[in-house]
Image 1 (cartoon, rainbow, N blue to C red):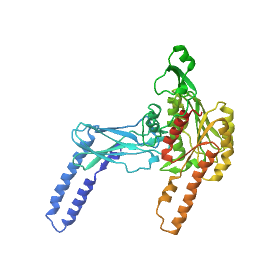
Image 2 (image 1 turned 135 degrees about the vertical axis):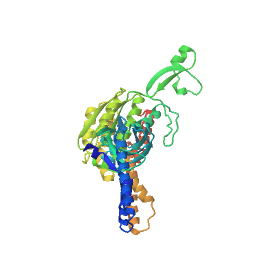
Image 3 (image 1 turned 90 degrees about the vertical axis):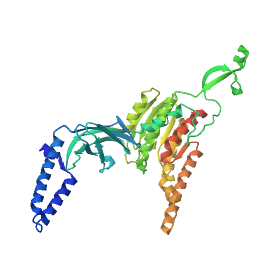
Image 4 (image 1 turned 30 degrees about the horizontal axis):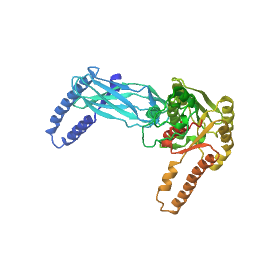
Length: 442
């Protein structure tokens, strides 16, 4: 039974059988053809039997699917397949991988030719758009001889599982922003430093170009040479990513939910904050408080943030900003930088939450981050040819204007604001953090 389940007839086999059947039909009129066809049929049967024996007399093909330890959400992740031909002849291989159901991809197939007693490999990439556990099915390998009459199927790699985490690839991509201040990349701002930060580092000799306002006159009098105070960016300041898990964060753009854009950005931002020697923390909320990870500057803390973000998902409820204010006011006594990832689609929604945002901004440095609707921008820029399309564009322009008006409303009350396209969220968030550090306003 196991033998029969692994034996498959090749397309060429059916072509030959159909040709022989047609020949037997014509032998009704051409009598001499009948015995010739029987000889060919017997020969074909023996060749097919030899083909089957050649495929099943040894272990044949071995295969292995190699997965990374974890997948990075919204990024291309490599999957490698290794193959070994243990036959003494060149083999044609078809590989059909049973990819996790989340990808909804049922047509994956690769064709290869592997010389006798040789190895081969290929890789492909997968881009997940949801976090969670992804299960791979069988790695099906169909092998055939050069005759290609029958195929032998073997299964490998059954029930392999890989976890999809927030985008750690994106996190590593922006590592340089915490290391090299002189790197210039498209989309990354050059921040002009204003004044001094508060943390004193050392007294050093004055050199041409030093700020004369930093001259330490007591040290100058003692040494007989000009001496200046040197400052550095303040460190060990608590910074929190505050993620709204309400229903408005469920909106998808380019296959990825706004919540996942926020999660990927908060991970990259936390990494930068830790490299800047600040303390990174995490708060998630919806209609109730979900998670509260106290800020810490330990190296291992980034892994805790990553694990905390792994299972974050929307609750399809209206978020309770009053509860957020009460919780933050009670749990965070020290002035902190709060990066609030949320989304407002209407001015009325912002006005309902504005009193709580103002209350948060009194004690902490609050940065409200919300999203431009890029699909509306595409609709506005499209050419309208019908009256209904003009009406749709007018409504879209009104929504787009409301977004900009919301940003102005928050800035009017002194609340730092980022209105960004989803794909530019990480760069804009990190730039805002670096700007705040340079200006020393925390």
